[in-house]
Amino acid sequence: MAHMAMKDTISNKLQEAFTPESLQVVDESHLHEGHAGHRAGGETHFRVYIVSAAFKGKSRVDRHRMINSALAAELAGSVHALAINAQAPGEG
Image 1: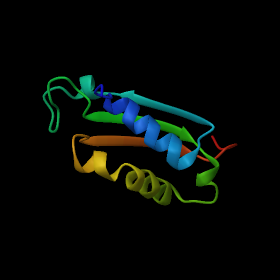
Image 2: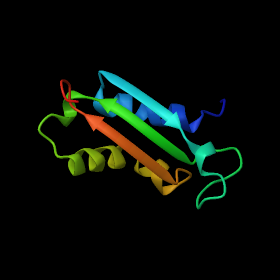
Image 3: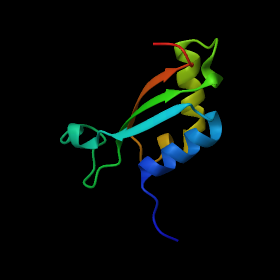
Image 4: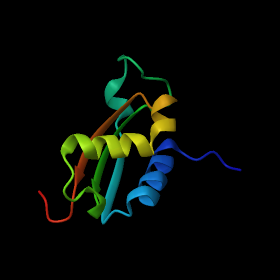
């Protein structure tokens, strides 16, 4: 089985967990060269932009907890940092 890029793994897990209206996962590892957690080859620092009805009525902290929970294995492993922009439809 081919190695799946971490960006794709994150996208797939968030798609499955939240059925988002929109989802963008950006690998920002190149911006963190020389910083803690950076490794050659990247795939350590990500930014997520997600819009999902699952976030309706939830606080910012609750939204982040939901996403961190869905990505617990990745955050406990090779992902060093995850920046999250989570909105419900119609926000922003």
